[in-house]
Amino acid sequence: VSGLDLSALLQSAPLPVGRHASITTALVLYFVAVAAIAVWASRRTRTASDFFVAGQRLGVVTMGVAAMAATVSGFAFIGGPGLMYSVGLGALYIVLPLSFTAVLGAWVLARRLRLLAEVRPVATIPEAIAARYRSPVAQGVAALAIVIATVGYLATNALALGYVLAAALEISLPSAIWLGSAITLAYSAAGGILAGVYTDLFQGLVMATASVLMCGLVLRLGEGVGGLSPAILAADPSFLAPSGTLSPLPALSLFYVFGLGTLGQPHVIHKFYMVREPRQLRWYPLVMTIAMSLTMLVFVSVGLGVKALVSAGALPPLARPDTAMPMLLTRFAPPALAGVVLAGVAAAIMSSVNSFLNVGAAALVRDLPNALGRPFSRELRWARVATVGLAVAATGVASWSGSAVAFLGIFGWGLFASTLVPALALGLNWRGATGAGATASIAIGLIVTLALETLSYTKVFTVPAGVTPAAIALTLSLGTMFAVSWFTRASAAAELDDDVAAVIDA
Amino acid sequence: LLGVVAAGAAYILGATSANGPVAIGSMVVAIAGTVAGALLMGAERDVRARRARALSAALVAGVILIAFGFAFLAPAMAGPTGVLWLGLPPAAGLVVYGVGVLPLLALPLVYAAGFTNPAPSAPAESPVDERSS
Image (cartoon, rainbow over all chains, first blue to last red; front, side, top):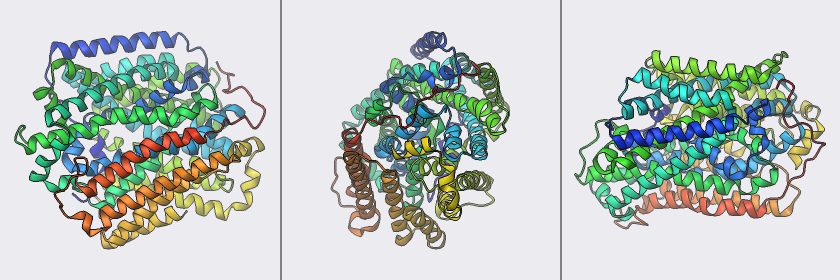
């Protein structure tokens, strides 16, 4: 394997876990708990501030765990272990950057965004871009990129949640897709991000618990980490090479995109607005790092464990890599654990969907109208309408579009990274960044990502050396930001308002 | 800027020489440069915060350069040795424990130690426009 297509990150096939009373019970209990939290939080959602930034009254633990839950989708539980089984340690280049991304986000964005919310009425990421550059055009282009990526993300996650519910409840896939979306939509539309973060907190705890339990099961089966490697090395030494079966350059490109790209994920970084006081951010990296580390144990351990079991002859070779988790659950885990893990998968998907619905609705209701100079009145009502519209559109795409849903899903992470990282990360830390540079970098990121991913998906053109298109797009958009800002440097000082300059210097 | 230029060079070299050592080396420099550059961006007045940022950047850039450099570019690390480092072959162990674990243990504490309580630099307004609620 020379490279890795990001479409490999999508859950796009049924889960063969079988029906069992314990699994159904665990899922029902999970949904009851989510519903109870959502009802409690929804009653406290009275304003647009509650809907978009949780009233700016979150503690750092709630915010950190919610950020983790929004970051981690069902991929960590199903697609990730399958990818690990398939390409060995090369899959780790998606999760290795976790060792520094929380601190990177905290140093580069967290304080700046939270302080910006002290001096400006910002609630969305495009609004931060507009405030920084005094540029409605940059805000509009950023919002457009968010809407495009959000619809793709939502459709793929609706499909993934459908597979989980179809497997656990033994209902048809279309019914499962609409059921899962309806449950998530109910609290997303009623309670906005306020309901979202408190359900995220619970969902994050379920995810971490499921991950730790699965890691424990693997270590018990393999008699520790040291017991797993010899069997794998005897059967397939390349699996434990530094980049597994991937070539080094594509593996390093994944590391680059998933490391820097975290600075452009709006569903995660807009949570920086939500903490009660900026000083609480001191412990954000610690909370986020612990939460992410525990939750991603499942990604590493299950792929490694199943490979070792297959290598030792204890399991037959997998027909499809993404059956690694279901295979382990059905062969070795007690049904109650399988139920907790499936609840964890559902939690991971729903927490991401909720956050995407919120940032997508904000882009439609706040950013695009404001960029066009026609702000909405009755914003809370329209935010709920937009949330319903986005969910219905994405669920419809997931139900009826066939393979197009996988095509839409590949745009998510890379599109956010290439469009938002330069404008935000450079803009909030460098006085020399200009509005023209930001607008150009967002546009280049959008165009290059859409073009390269489309050409790659349709196999018309593949980036040489197996490099992911998102890495090329991110590099080009960063380079564009530097170059255009340099050429338009005469306007840099004039575009920077005093209060925003004070945030940059704080 | 150095990191972005190095990344561009890595991809151009990668397109012409696949996974040659110069392309891989450029990409390693690109990653170390962009991440360290991002960590160092932004002017902070507080000396303690500046030191913490510099320490974080040095740690991340150091482990990336050393771990990836040895794992991919040092021939002695590439071959099978029979020795395992905490359950992994040496080259893989260097990457997993060096890049994946070491910063994870140290950086959040370095950040907390260097954190300064920022005060709003301008008169506070309503945090979110409530006009439409």
